Image: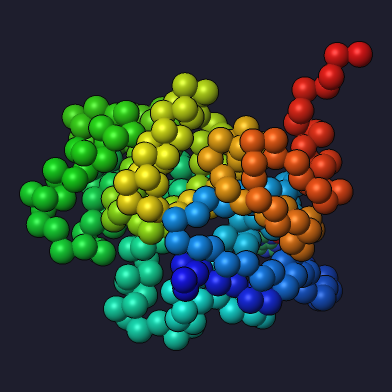
Length: 261
Ligand SMILES: Nc1ncnc2c1ncn2[C@@H]1O[C@H](COP(=O)(O)OP(=O)(O)OP(=O)(O)O)[C@@H](O)[C@H]1O
Ligand code: NI
């Protein structure tokens, strides 16, 4: 089956600006090869600064890689037609870590969630309103809050608004970049149940960027470990989650509670 997304030789360097002298560009992703299969659930682990968000920005066509390519259902992102790009935007949705920065503070919650419906679907405004109410309820927010501004919502509520927005177009791939880590445990459970149900209902694939190995074990079938921009491990996830690479083991040991001495 054709992968949803296929990265080959994905490399990214950033020019380091400095007034005094020019530095050689810094390579932060090196030669990543990764396929995302329809319906799968993949975790991307790695220390802070290891390249997780940079990898996602390349995979989602939000940035141009310095080398390598990304294919969406077999089509090179660089050669998508207008219509194919619109379909790509509809099918692949993302929730960023920083939801406050991801919304327009002057737009009401209902308009924020309806954004992708307006640009990427042909729903009438009545149908959009109904879909927004359905989405708000599905993330545990009162549909009446559609008339609130972001400034009237808590951080956790806003994060759920962003998750609702990402789910608005029934995506085939949802990317969550540390998107539940700052929700309280109860809310995390509700969002994880929602994603689990959606995956069963619609076959939606999910990529979790997370430091939370509990989440990986609960929801993911495969895990990729990044270290300084390189993929150092790709393993299946079973209930034990036994990472094999040195970096994977270090991440695992770092989070397991120290065994009582
Ligand atoms: N626009 C940019 N310009 C220069 N360097 C960048 C840019 N974006 C990311 N980097 C660098 O690339 C490396 C990877 O950053 P990235 O945000 O992908 O890490 P991460 O794994 O998502 O980290 P975290 O877990 O803290 O979110 C970091 O060293 C970062 O400083
Ligand atoms: Ni990140």
